[in-house]
Length: 187
Length: 203
Ligand SMILES: [Zn+2]
Image 1 (spheres, chains in turn purple, yellow):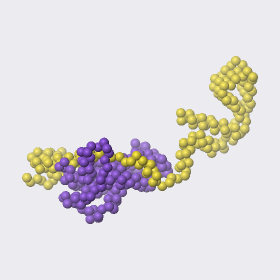
Image 2: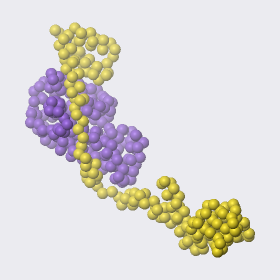
Image 3: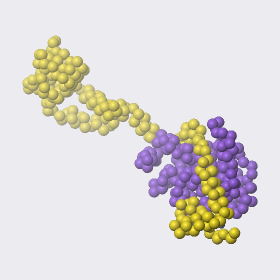
Image 4: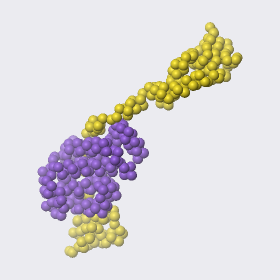
């Protein structure tokens, strides 16, 4: 797997775009999922995920092979999503700590999510509730929760992706879990 | 009931799979006695399960194509390289021309030694290879710096480099028969040989 990626990256650095298409195919689901959970809207997620791949391609020369390629991609996608969240929100929201439910009700107007037809109404409602709860998290908690529970990454990987100490990752996950619990724990 | 403040912290350590055995024991003992904390812990675990079971949505089917369309144009040399890779004959020919022509002139002029690719069922007289009447050579024959006289049969191609071929009226060659006496024939012959090798590698 890693040799496959390394070979493709070598070719991409030489400017071979076809090699990059293989990389996109490989990671598109994960990157899209991350953006979707961060942004809560399919259309915005599609655009953000595409932009993340374009940025990764343009900046491929700055990619350090000591890092997992997927981690580097997640970092780009996470930062991009956070940028987009900040652009569409008032800044007062940003530094708000998750202390009680007050901080979580600020964002009440939510974009609707499309569902695939095979989803039952019941599970669709649950899906929406879950997504809304994630979106109510300020982005610093949202990103760690998405990386941990949607992308299923280790604390070490999350620390690397977000470039923050493991202790900080833990604190954010704890607070994120507590905040989510207030919305989902009673279900 | 008064709960020690750090019990919640222990719950999260447990959920992070990062708890010492002593702490875990303390947590378990407390949860057994305290229904409020037990409830808190269960709702945390339920919350995690909900997040983990969020459906795995996928991007549009033309996602990759859209990304590729948004990339800056690639360099010409890379496109040429890939095109050549997809056209092995051209690649072999151009590689051959670029790298080999120089040395070919040398081999063309320098290699004067008589050689023949097979010794079976043939007679060699001086610099002439004879396939006698009634004899059959299985496979190709390449004669360098000599001639060939075919009175029998060759089941294959006959190539004569720097020489002449004589095909008797009764003689038979099932494959191609070729005489190479010009430097360009020689180059063409080498190109075809290297392409055959490339094709074999692709089979
Ligand atoms: Zn308690």
